[in-house]
Length: 135
Image (cartoon, rainbow, N blue to C red; front, top):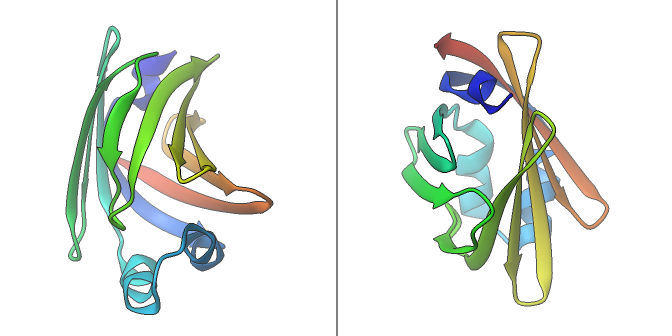
């Protein structure tokens, strides 16, 4: 259920994120910041309303959307894309489309206290793991 995603999550580790950022077209300086940042992510899902806030020493990002409705998103790396959030069972799936490309971010809770985020662009896959900080 989507309610398991609600709460505050602290970054624990990240795998292959630099390659994912390269595939997105992120420059070296921003990739270095992205690789050392340990963001705290807050997710709030109420019905079909979704709010997310990511806070790190590098940047604070906010996103608000409605499940199953496309919205205009500006990503942390400055891309302007069309995004849509959908539920696939207990997974929150975000599709970002821009300039003929598509990235898919899948968020789900592993057990009770780990949030997994799989970031996919083409054949590049990055996995980011967060620990529950607060419910």
